[in-house]
Length: 314
Image (cartoon, rainbow, N blue to C red; front, side, top):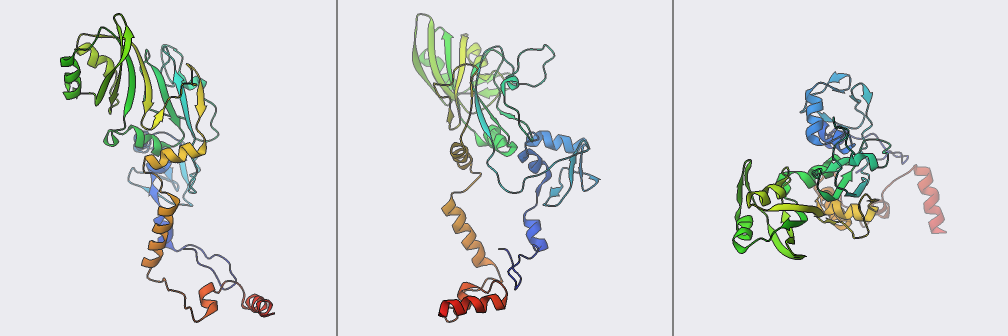
């Protein structure tokens, strides 16, 4: 809790309170939109980040007032929690999810609006010949929560096959198929209709391996003629979002996404946690109900308090 002088002015924070606000350097840079946590760790390991004039190390922590530079440029870290920007985009076939391409192919980043500070981070990728939902954010921590394998976030696809899956093939997909990079499986698969040899299926996976859906079907001897990602975690692609269109999520939907990721608590939970923290503080004292001034707290100059009390008596 903030401390006040007898004149009601806020005092400087205690050193231990500043330490409580410290954060891992690579995490703070990712939150500032500089890139993913892994990219920031590599940036620090390469010696391209300085902390208070010294070459930073991966294990360093940063706190308010510290001077952080990346490639010699000062980076402003926002310690006050701000709602990150989240944008959804309907990727078309024939676009890459990369900023650099030696072949000069169209990039999904060409269609994104400019960001004043930081940059857009892609949450997951889609193959060159795959279309569907792409999510972008300016918050590296949010991107990490949605893409790291340990969180097992669902990805739902609509896949059109040349041919139909029989019961044995569907069962093998659910139990696991041996690919060149290990066993892969789908968590759910259901038929979704079709005409002739073209049959649609909806399936859910919890991994982000390269070309995983296509390789699973190729392993069964089937060809994917069309692949669309329709959902990533709690975010589903709305029908109004046509190919090549983008839409930024409003703040209330971004807050709901952050809660789903466990990155923020509800107002009630936060208030209860703050109250519990206050009760545990060694210098916390319960107000004395026998003394009105103790219950309200002595804030401000004594002369000002006497004037206030005199006005109340009148």
